[in-house]
Image 1: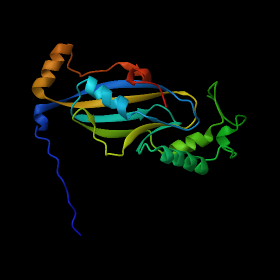
Image 2: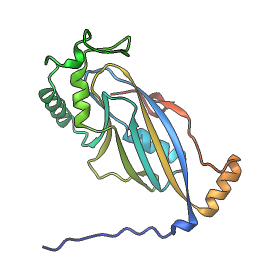
Image 3: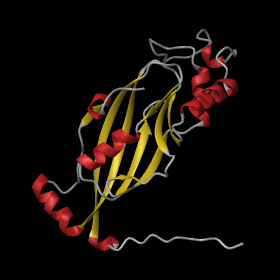
Image 4: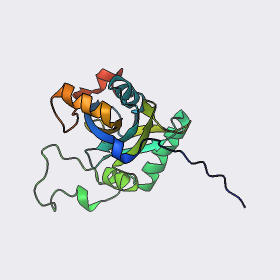
Length: 199
């Protein structure tokens, strides 16, 4: 069986390119125990606004009960995902983590009996890294980037780190304009900067 392999070339050699780094921190309020929040359009808008044409983006959740995953944004499929997670990690199970009389400090003041949420997260992932092409995430036609709330409602933080590949001349000009050689660090933004809060 033959396989078609398409090679995508990057004409500028590494010696003539440099990398700048931009970080944004999204603050995302959630309303449901399990909630899929689509971050794709917000990230693409940031890429266009910062003129980041080529590179890579890492989307990272700063929580152990909120995950990052790429999948399809079809409404019924998202409901199937929720049912699947609940079936694998039922809330009512007698988990050791939920027995506060046996837990050793430190224990958060607002600690919840949420072992099922941690187990759900264990099945998912904390981050995804996606290539950037022509000022947008190089996703497939059905792919979307989700933050998955597993213990809501809560307020979540998602860090988005953008690595932009620049020709050496453009990079030097940008460094002079910024008065620095170490690259860029973007602003702290919340979900309202990108057209609304969590779905």
